[in-house]
Structures are given as structure tokens and as C-alpha cells.
Image 1 (tube, rainbow, N blue to C red):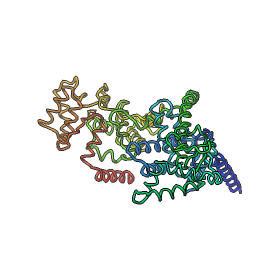
Image 2 (image 1 turned 45 degrees about the vertical axis):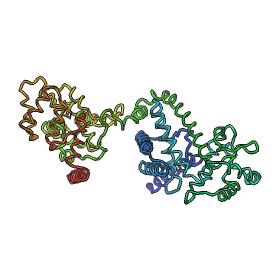
Image 3 (image 1 turned 90 degrees about the horizontal axis):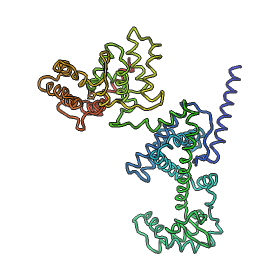
Image 4 (image 1 turned 60 degrees about the horizontal axis):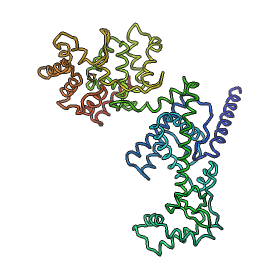
Length: 513
Ligand code: SF4
């Protein structure tokens, strides 16, 4: 009875929330939003973070499609698929989705704020948002377009009445007949690309009689269109075709967007301090999460499993083999080693949840580290490396230069072994020879590598090592980062299909374990 009452109350509350959302997002901005009003719903930081990153994903997909030369139908397909992938739709199966519309509006405002601080990001945001708007607008019926315009202050684009069109029919036919661009458009729609004068005249007469084809608009709105003959001055008014109206709407939205993005800078400054521990770090990190410096390919999150780390050891460069070995032996790494290995594993595709399990499993094998100690002292550092703590920066894996510049002490295992085993070590390269021997590199090859390392050409020595264990195949661009070394090695040792099988097996083992 009590539970029944509780359930009823909860259901009522959910229904009330749903109705409120529908009222808020289902009116003016049901299928398309001009984003004039910022949402004020209470949302968790996780919700906001997900929404911002999903919007970023959609805009990035649009940007990639555009820079890949996609246009028209191809571009539309790319946008539709990005909306699907990131669940960023305002309708589901043709029906208005209030929760989807709320998420769409929220994510737009978050990205607007996240992009306002640099001209490069502002431009990126404006261009891709405009493309998204064009796509969504193009999907609307004429009635829905009129509704959007009416409710978003585009009132000066009025549909011509049947009476006006009837009275002006001959004038409209004559301007269409003289419109070269319109003729071209109609010709492109004909089956054989040809259009005779009689046929064209018939089309113009038809179009001139169709009330739904014409809009009467404010003269000041269409000055450039008059010059380019896409608006016709008839009886003191400017008349445009419905196809031209779309261009005017896009121009208007673009102007609004420019203004709104410029205003976002002031807004951002206002709450930067107030939200210093919540929204500000999130907004500042959005554009950094996917871009790094130097070699910027990082494994797609989720392409590496814990078992896969062991299974792909053959592709680890010497620095990472050393760290991995030290971790397995001591069940501990000092700070420099943890950071170098954590970011590398992230760079080769180990997702955060797997990273937490991997490090916890290794560290808690030591009697000095309980599960509680791990959570208290080490879990934060791993989440931090993945941009989930602190400034929420998506840290990129260390480049070779960074590893070489490190100054590890006797208890440390990080740095670049080509340097740490030769620089200031008076053993004629014996330890490096020994290490190369574990890779089955000996004789002249080993001597040549040690000589390069002794002469401080560490990355060249590493590249020679790569060639020695990959049947002479070299990394053409040279070795720049440990995770680049890994990816180059996988290309040779496990080209895509084989690699997937290896990782698939590894994943299977991981699940079985
Ligand atoms: Fe690692 Fe780079 Fe040194 Fe090679 S050169 S061992 S990849 S740090």
C-alpha cells in the first residue's frame, strides 16, 4: 500500500517533469531552436559533461565531413549519422522528444561558452553550428519553417496571399522568365539537362500561379538579393521564391549566432570564478580533450584491454618494457614512472575503467598497499591523467623528448633507457647490450645501437632497435613518442584484421578472467 502510494507519487512527479519539459522546449523550438534563451534546468555535472562532449562530437563530425569535401546529400548523411551516434536529436521516430530537445539546447549553450575564448574556436563553432542548423531546417515542412520563423522573430518574411499572387501573376511570370539562375535550376532538374523555351515558359506560368512559392519581404532585408536578381521588386514590394527564403533564414541565423557567440565572452567572464570548481574546468577543457601536440594519434578509447597489454608486449618500446617489468616485479612505481606508463597505456587505447582495475590489481599485490590505500593515494592520479580530475585536461602521452629530459633517481624506472643506461654510466654500454640481448639483438647490430646511444642519439638508437626486431622495417618519420612506436609496430606485427583478432582474444581472456 505504502509502496503503491510512493510509486504513484513518483509517477506523478515524473509526469509533471515531462509536461514541464514539453511546455518549455515543445513550443517555439519544437523541432528547431534558434537558441535565444539559455536552459535553466537543474542538471548534474555528469549530465552537463556528457552533453558538452556529445555536442563536440557532432560538430567535429560535421567539421571532418566538410574538410573531407562532403557536400549536399553526403554531408546530410554525415550529419544524420553524427546526430544518431551522439544521441543529439530533437525528435525520435518523427515525434518530438522533449528530453532530446532539452539536451540539444543545453549542449549548444555549453559549447558556445566553451568556444568563445579564442577566435579559432569561435569560428569553428559558428561554421559547424550553422551547418547543423541548415540541415535541420532543411528537414522541416514549409509549415514548420513558417512556425519557426514566426516564433523566432523572423516575422518580416510573410507568405504571399493567393489574392496577391493572382493579381501579380503576369509580373511574376515575366521576372521568372528573365531569371537566368532560375532557368538553370529548372534545367538541372530535367532528365536530359535540356529545357526548351516553350517548356520553360509553361513552368514559369505554373510557378507564378502557386501561392505557396512566394514570399513578400522587407526591402532592406533583400538589397543584395535584388542586385543578384534573386528578389523581384514588384509594386513597391520585394518578392522572393521559397528557395531563396531559405538563404535569407540562414543569413539571419548566422548573424544571430555571431552576436550570441560574441556575447558569450562577457557571460563566461561573469561566472568563471563563481563556477571555478564545477563548470569552468569542464568548459575550458572541451577543446583540449581531443587535440594534443606533436604525434597526436591516441588509441581509440576501448581498443586495449588489460589482457591486451600483456599480449602486445612485443610492440612496447624499451622505455615501456622497462616500466612494465618494474611494475610487475615491485608492484609499485614512483610518481614519474606511474605518470609515464599511465599516459602511454591511455595512448595505446586503455580506457579509464580498465586502467583503474589494472593499476589497482598490480599495486595491491604489494603487502604495503591495501585497496583503501590505493583508492586514497593513487586512483586520483589515474583519473587525473584521463582528464577527470583537477583542471580536466586531456593529457597526451609523454613524447620521447620528455622521457629523455627526465632525471630518474636510483629507485625510479622511468625516462629513456637509451639515455639512462649510457649517460654517465662507465660500463662501455654493457647494461644496454644486455637489455638489447633480451630482444635477441646482438653482435654488430647491438654495437651500432649502443654507439648511437653513447653519442646521445637516443631516438635514432631506438629507431634502429625497432628496425632490428621488425625484420629491417624502419619507422620512416623517426621515433617521436613511445605510443607512436607501439602503433607502428602493430601495423607490422598485427595488421588490422590480425590485430583485432589478437585484441579480441585478449578481451575474451580478460572477460573470462
Ligand atoms: Fe622510449 Fe622514445 Fe626512448 Fe624509444 S626513444 S625508448 S620510445 S623514450
